[in-house]
Length: 75
Image (cartoon, rainbow, N blue to C red; front, side, top):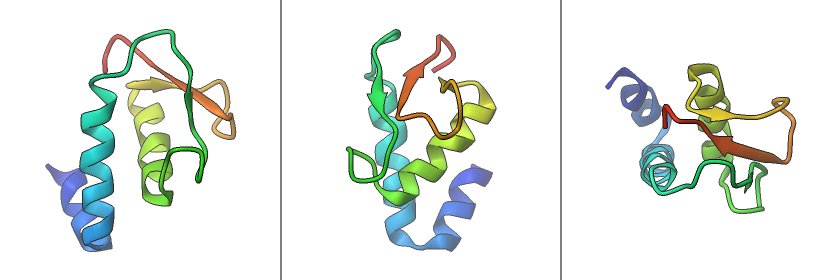
């Protein structure tokens, strides 16, 4: 709830990007790599959200600069 409030402060595009990314994350398969770069399937706002999700443990990236991410069982 608080995270979405922060996204709304950033603008409507950011809020929509956060929601769409979170919904898409629920359909990802574990162990399958997904692109973690801007213009390779993610918007700039989604890349920011992705880094926050790494901190929360919902996705795994070897480094925050990696080109791929993986969902965890928590996602």
